[in-house]
Image (cartoon, rainbow, N blue to C red; front, side, top):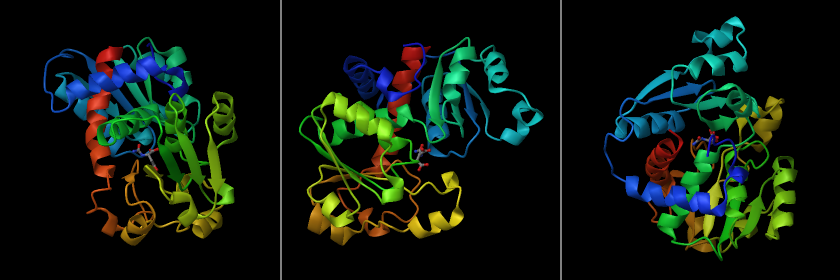
Length: 296
Ligand code: NCD
């Protein structure tokens, strides 16, 4: 693997190799990447993903250089992404980049001398999140085949649900996509699932949709991607999961969320055994350690 830019690029074998490696990095500290440098370029807000990449590199004995403020980088002077990639790849051994434009990670990869990891390109993809989501399902349920995976929230602008759907399509799963009509799952994802013969349903009905889920993957409405702020206001509280709903409708589901959570999961769910969203954060470090060792 030269770069990790999207979920579809990974074969089932490659996914399983990464997950297996991640298993060996849980609670690991070592010097495997001593002398290597990760450039973490975050041109869009991030807490988890950036700190998770940085932690992963530190736990492997490597070091990190980063940009977290576009205003403090040469992009603010008009430098193109192509040139930034050419420059940064002369400092670093691997680059993790997050940028508001879909497709930006590909531009980076085309101009970089070193491997590029897409850490979120606008409403495009977020393949390392998908890998850590896969790892969470494997750790918490132990299998992918036969699962009913329900995704709720902003399936149009969110980059996590589509990235995970592409990866899970390597297995015998069925999906339910629960969203308001304005925020339906991207058409290209549905075409991909059709081609692969993976069943999915779409509904606006939250209670009906989440019934009997094995995996309930909740997402926030992506405020920053709405052209019309009123549209966001109308949709922002459309679905709220609480303890009572979980108990009544999907008592055996694991509940996942890429975070940040805004209103879509009420805090009374946090104490439930079903809630795995903070576990996801923990697993993410091991997955990124696995990737960094495979790419450098
Ligand atoms: C997500 C992202 O940035 O796409 N966060 C993350 O990386 N864990 C989800 C989101 O912002 O809603």
